[in-house]
Image (cartoon, rainbow, N blue to C red; front, side):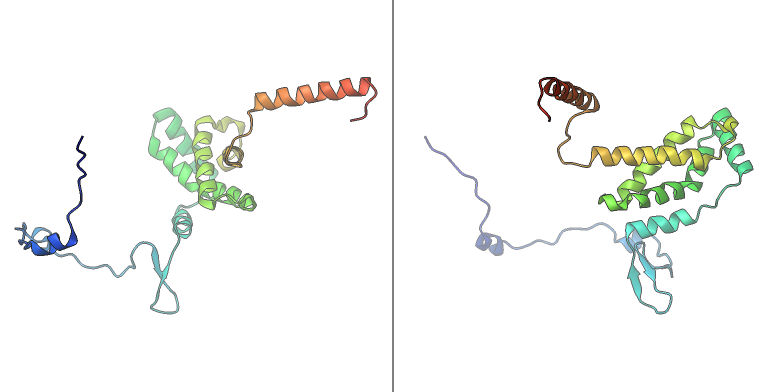
Length: 197
């Protein structure tokens, strides 16, 4: 039986072969017209206020800056946008409502930074809660959307923390109930027999 092993070419073999120039198509300058270079710094960088130096920006800082661009909504605007979303099916109205209330999930996520979870992950889960809140919101209850959305945002953040607290998930709610029920039963049995647990 003969076994052949494919080997990569040796460095010496590669050096001996002449390299032929490839025929290239038109250059990028010929295809696209030249455009003016912006005075703004590249994304991910910000020009420092007191100098001409460019300071790197994290994704979180950039996200927070973009959230600040969305104005707060008055109660009347909120109700109008929600009416457009529910009655007319205008998804842009829902997006405006969510974008104006992103600060809610940011502030709630900040409350859970001590858990060691990534700040952006917490904010994203809070944003998912905002999206869920807009589906369930009832303006006839005379409550502002941000107050209602705060509960959903917090619920999604807490669910994220509970699901990702350990590498290995330890039991579900039903399993935990069985365990504690049996634990109470065994404790009562020991007490009846005269043993103090």
